[in-house]
Length: 128
Image (cartoon, rainbow, N blue to C red; front, side):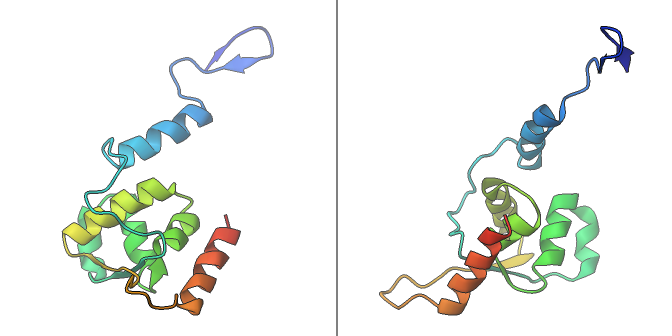
């Protein structure tokens, strides 16, 4: 660190926390803002792979796999991992593309919504 202006310290060449929070999600997704497939926030995600498959993955992907060993909605995973929803969607879609997670989309054929699912999503949103 380089001291500037007396007692006030500043770091030169080191991103601030605000800058870091903007750069990190971009880096996690390789710059992508949308996944190849559209995933609903209420879609349920479950892990298909065992822990031996985790080592070749990025830390964020490993955390998603660990969390989704117990089925979670995309919104829950995003909230519990303190990850922006768009980033979670992209990473989950990547995991699904290689067969490490299953995505269970809600039915859209005029059925009444699952109350238990809606309750879980609401609880996840409240935790934000």
